[in-house]
Amino acid sequence: DSGVTQTPKHLITATGQRVTLRCSPRSGDLSVYWYQQSLDQGLQFLIQYYNGEERAKGNILERFSAQQFPDLHSELNLSSLELGDSALYFCASSAQGMDYEQYFGPGTRLTVT
Amino acid sequence: DAKTTQPPSMDCAEGRAANLPCNHSTISGNEYVYWYRQIHSQGPQYIIHGLKNNETNEMASLIITEDRKSSTLILPHATLRDTAVYYCISRGGSQGNLIFGKGTKLSVKP
Image 1 (cartoon, rainbow over the protein chains, first blue to last red):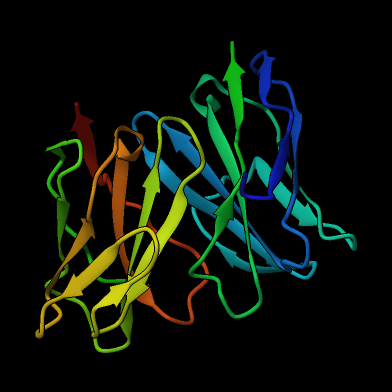
Image 2 (spheres, each protein chain N blue to C red):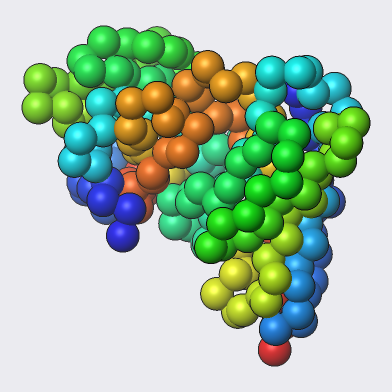
């Protein structure tokens, strides 16, 4: 158990819909990262937040957005969903100054039908 | 970030040492080498990292060549639970995100 929690574990939705994935980092960790893992693209970094502020952006689509709240939990919002958005979405967190050691949650498996 | 190259798959007998190679010939002086693993569909797990000296922790050892162009992750006594995809990542120390390649799928067999 990494200490990072993600909800829901599974999500099935239709094309065009919008979903929100939630992540609670390890206690005390200020950084939260979102990654997408699909069969054809592998693990792709999406975005990083540090203490509520966006720190780095990766291959995140404009249809996707994220935020980190004052209690440090984070949400990833995916809208206008397409079949190709079906993937495992992982959240990770790290302690201050130790962003190389990221603790990953169990992931949310999103299926778009 | 330096590009890393790993063999797509390897087998190892249970109880034997697993030696996973990684080539990072374009690594620059301030880039570290990090190793993560991902057991089937679970979140990746940090294993170890190093800059130029060999490193050891409770999970594994990391051997980096003197020219830093390659490294080897060593699991000294592999168990069936070590079956996973192992990722070698090279990046600067101040960067936040990790860039995962395809990794090496290690199969530990009884």
